Length: 332
Image: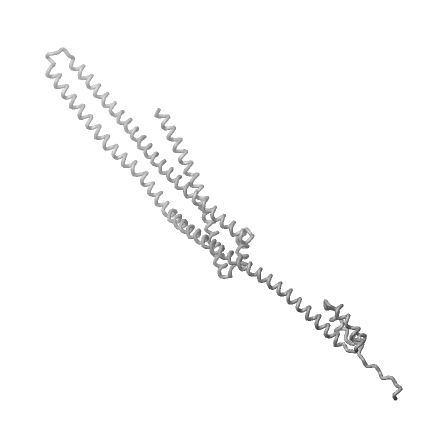
């Protein structure tokens, strides 16, 4: 009994590798595995693998500490980036608010101009009707006055001639025996002269009518030309204002493109909705921009209409000037 050797029941490293392979693989994944591995011979010689466990725990603690430090550094970097992004977002939101206020001001100005244009469009037919009446009445009044005064002038002229003729006839009768004059011949000459004067007077009256008519026509054309020139000037000013508004709207669109990185308004609104401001603000901005774009289209249509009106007025002025030159040349 005493001569038998005592069976060795100590745990070996080979036994651990076969019995717990997963645990061994996890130990090998440690950064300081070499240090842990170097403790295995000592543990085998002592028959106590707690030394390996202590080295493994120590290596794991060091690894966790390193990981924690790395995570701390990454958290600091992320916090720094977050603060920077927050500051950029605040600046962007402030810039957007300012641009939105500018857009509101532009929209209000456009609404005022639109209301003004609507009023002008409603007023233009009445002005045209009034112009037609004004064009018609002066000619009628002038014709009536001309007929009336021409008749009075003719009657007064005939009355003066008849009185002068009567006085001359009386003078001849009183002096017929004192001078040698052929009364019949003198009377005939006087009668012919009287008729000639009447014809000349009628002719002069007709020429006077023609001159008065030409003067009235030229005066009327001059007034129309002045009105047309004023309309052309007003239209030019309005065109300049609309072109300036279009330039401002184009600049606003470009600024919106700079902020979002896209030029299309719908895509820019989508980016604003997703990245910059809350949904409620984006919807409000989208409505304002849509209203602005509608106003822009309306201004473009009004601009084209004003251009056509301007061309029509220019042609009318050109025709009026040409006709006036022809009239001046014919009179010369």
